[in-house]
Image (cartoon, rainbow, N blue to C red):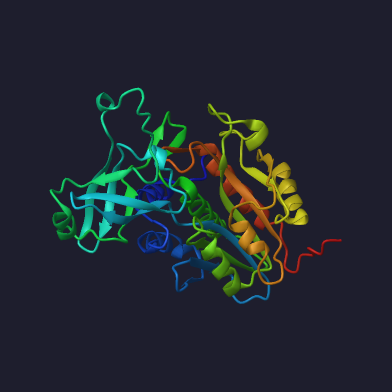
Length: 358
């Protein structure tokens, strides 16, 4: 029986279909907060938009569960006299998938529709070898010139997102843009719901966090870690399914969608906390996969781990196909097992848990 309710799925669809580009996450954070409010005792929002709810506030022991809210996007960088728009990245947007994509340009006048244009195959000779690059992709909004583009409300600095929406594939996968990492925000919200509905009493204060600006350097997590000053942090993000074509397992690890969450071994991951997670998975028959990260995890785990003199932190990852595209794919069973693993792990932690290294 699924632990994800119909109500939860409706929230997920609404949440993922909403645009939440880095630095402009406000609307998505409003949706997320409205969903978790019934399940938390307090909620807060910091100056840059990181949102969090608190369960059992006021204790001297603080545990964080966290995902990040922002999605990759583009900025308008230059408008030609002919009315074509050149862009720069906002986060790790993949320029190679841009041609022929439909986009939403966010302006003070509302959404303006556009497309990433591309020369027709008939006009490219075999010797031309034109490939998408950051300096040659462009957006067409159907304008006759620069003045008409500007009259639409488009200016340098407007943010641009793809318009692709969430679908279900083979009744097995959720597919869409920005599953990285609003699926993480969904998972921690579901943990809060389960704790409330099952009347679980925790011996510490639990902070359910949805951070901003991860895609440009873990910035939201850095800020909120300094605010909360947690004793423990469990972060959830996405990782690569390495079973699709053209991915080398020896380089990128051995992780497959449908085989359960992945846990990471890395310098930032605290060994004792990781062992609690692994023991929890074994006790509750939750499948897990393992991977290693050289130097850093590249996730908000690093921001929490190296804050406030060192915070015991761990990473639970959702296997994902086609990261940073508009067809990111997550297996429904993996999403459920991420939720279960965090939910069960929280009940194994106690107030004042000894995380001294030896």
